[in-house]
Image (cartoon, rainbow, N blue to C red; front, side):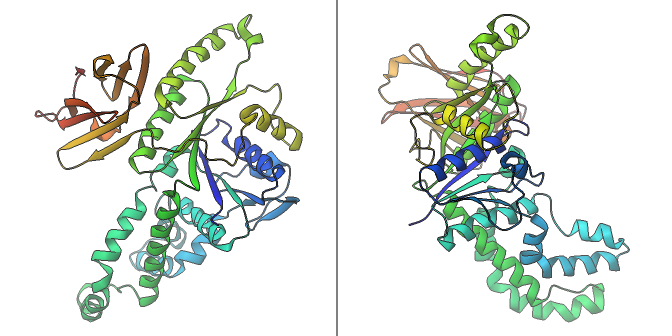
Length: 401
């Protein structure tokens, strides 16, 4: 049986490493062989667990392992031939050796190679649960469409590579004074593409894999998490929980932190509006750093209570966004709603849906800034909103339907 895979992501500094470590400890305490791995280039998992971790799984205690994936090792394993060819190409053109080596790795590629460890653990059968402390939101999101792009390359480009390269190599060296990629280079790229296609299947397997968003109840952080949530749904990745960390407790309602707590409580309404019906897990702002076994276990107890940390806590995509060349359609399940109860408004990139006294706020991708609402319908228990590109090409204004 495939292991349960839980990926934690969020804006830098929200405490996702602590949450990931607390989740892993709770899974191990439930009798599951668990590995928690960091793919964030700025590793802090060792500090959180108070155990020195390496690039391979390190046993922390019975059933619990930790790993800080070293991107450089992964790149040498998967990208060596490509890096060598690109490096030589650049140095021949006058780029110094150190800069050339840096330029052979596209931005975000280190995180991509690190995530391939998820595939490795899934195939090994060594663990029941794999918990991933991902890089900050933006870095992870850029990689989500890679498998789809790789599928296109495998289908459209690679079948012709041998004939094209064999014919072009003499011409390239004689006329253009460049060396075309060797077979080893193509093998590296093709192997990576195949791995990413396999990763795509793993990440979209909603029976075993889900993403959990970690955020603080600060308005800018909540808004970014809402955008992330939309992207995850767009790519078909299941978000089964949202973790709101560092919530000021009731004791902070008076005194110096009173205004902060009031603002946090207002932002919690935005959280409930933006992520419904996904479960919201909350943890209070701790009086000390969450470091070490006791503190992490306390955090895990507060977050999960009677819930099993390894369970899939929510089963369905909360919304679907499909696009074509000129339009986009947002589908939002609204069970038990009646047509007359629904009110819809688009303000900039926010779609605000009211159903009776309830409000849902959806953040659209920035690419839809130039679109305006062209129609909406309620059918089969779901609201479908259609957006079309504004005729003047300018960002669309506020619209209602």
